[in-house]
Image 1 (cartoon, rainbow, N blue to C red):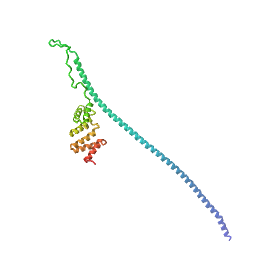
Image 2: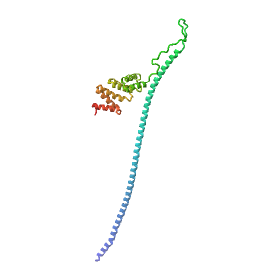
Image 3: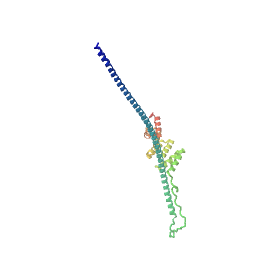
Length: 287
C-alpha cells in the first residue's frame, strides 16, 4: 500500500507535464499554420497583382497592335495615293513627250516652208534687181521693158503639209468607211513621215482597213510593221493579237496560236491578252 502511493503520485505529477508538452506542440502548429496562411495570403496578393499587371500589359499590347495596324493601313493608303500620283505624273509626262514630238515635227515642216519661202523671195529679189543696159546697137535693151514673171514653185508657194494633217486626213477617210482612200493616204503618210508619233496607230488603222477589204495578207504586213518599226509603242499587244486574227483568216492555225500565246506571255495584263485567251479557247487550245 505504501509502495502504490508514490507511483500514483508520480503519475499525477507527470500528467500535467505531458499535457503541457502537448499544448506547446499545438501552439507551435497553430503558429505555423498562421504563418502559412499569411504567406498564402501574400502569395495570393502577389498573384493578383501579377494578374492585374498581365491584364494591363495585354491591353497595352492590344492598343499598340491596333495602332500599328492603323499605321500600316495609313501607310498603305499613303503608298496607294503616291502610286496613283506617280501614275498620273507618268501619264502626263508621256502626253507631254508625245506633244513635244508632234510640235517638233510641225516645227520641221514650218522650217522647211520658211526655207522655201526665203528661196522664193530671193528669186523675186534677183528678178527685181535692175539689169545693166547693153551697148550693142544690134540688141538694145530697154530698162523700162517688162520682165517675165518668176517661175512658179513646184508646191504652189504654200507651206508643206505637217504629219498631223496627213494622218488626220487618213483617219477621216477611215472613219467614213472610205477604206481604199484611207489606205492610199495612210501609205503616203507613212512614206513621208515613218517616225511620226501617229505612225504606230496609223499602221494599225491601215491593217484594219485592209481587213475591211478582205485582204488579210496586206493587213498582216501592216500589223507586223508595228513591233518592227515602233518597239516602244503601246499598240504592240494589239498588233500581235491582230496578227493572230490574220493568220486565222489565212488558215495558218499554228502561226495564229503562236501569236495569241505571245500576247498572253509578254503582255498578260493587256486587253489584247484577254481577247487572245478567248480565241485560244474557241480554238480548243486551252480550256
